[in-house]
Image (cartoon, rainbow, N blue to C red):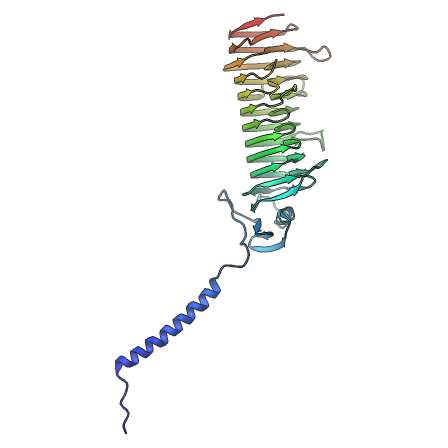
Length: 391
C-alpha cells in the first residue's frame, strides 16, 4: 500500500502549531527574565538629577546602593543613608549625589554626616524623635567643602535641623522643616576655628516652623546669599546673623518669631557687618515682613553696614525696630509700614554709640513712632509719616 504525501495545507498547519509552541515557550522564558526584582531598585532623583548613591525604602527594609550595586540592607534608615554616602568615590573632587527614596525616623542624638563634595537629596520626610545634645543634627557637616542639600523635609525635635561648622561653598536649596520643638532649624558657624570665616554659603529657600530657637542662624560667615527665609512660630529669631559680613538676602517672612523675647524676625549681632574697623554697606536685605513676635528688626552689639529696602512690620512687640550700638544702618530705602510700637534708636554706654542711621519712606500707624534716646550722630529721617521723638 502506497502512502500518499501530506497535502501542503496539512504540512503548513503542523508547522504553524510547532512555531506557536516555540513562541509560547519563548514568551514564558522572556516573562521570567523580565519579571520585576523582588526588592526595590536603586534610587531615583525627585529633581531629575544624576544619582550616584541611594538609600531606598522597600517596605520595612532599607537598602543602600552605590550606583546600581546594593551595598547594605537592614531596618535602619539612618544607617542606609550614611552607608550610601560612605560608598561614594573616595577622594572625589566634584559633587556626587545621594538620594533618599522613602520616609523614616532617626534619633535626635544622631546625625546624617556629609563629607566634602557631597549632595543630599531627600525625596521623602525624615522625622527626628527624642532628645539629643551636642553636635547632633538631622544633617551635619564639619570641615567640609562643596556640600549641598538639594531637598530636605524634616519634622520632629532635632537639636539642629541642619548644622554646618567650618564649611565652605555650601548650598541649601529647598529646605522644609515643620518642627515641634528642639533647637535651631539651620545653623552655620565657624566655631571649630574662629581664626577664619566660613565662606560662600547659599540658602535658596528655607521654611522653618515650630523650632524652639532660631529658624536660621549664622556665626562667622563671609559671603552669604539668601533667597527666602520663612519662619513661623519659632522660639527666637527668624534669621539671625552674628559676626557675618557680605550678605545678600531677598526676603525674610516671619510670623510670631520670638514671641515674649527680645529676638526679632531679622536680627544682626556681634559685630555683624563690621569689616576691619569700619562699616561699609555689606549686608543688604530686600524685604523684612513680620507680624507678631518679639521684634521685627534688631541691630545690636556694634553691628551695622546694613541696608533694608522695605519693611512690613505689623504688631511686632513694643519695639518693632531696635537699633542699639550700631553704625551705618539704612531702613526702608524703598518704603515701608510699621504698625504699633516704638522704633527705638538706642545705645548702651559700654559699646560704641549708635551713629550714621537713615530712616526714610516710612508710614507709621496705630501709634507707632520713632524715639531717639540717646542722641544719634548723623541721623537722617525723611519722608516719615508719624510721630518722631528726638533726643
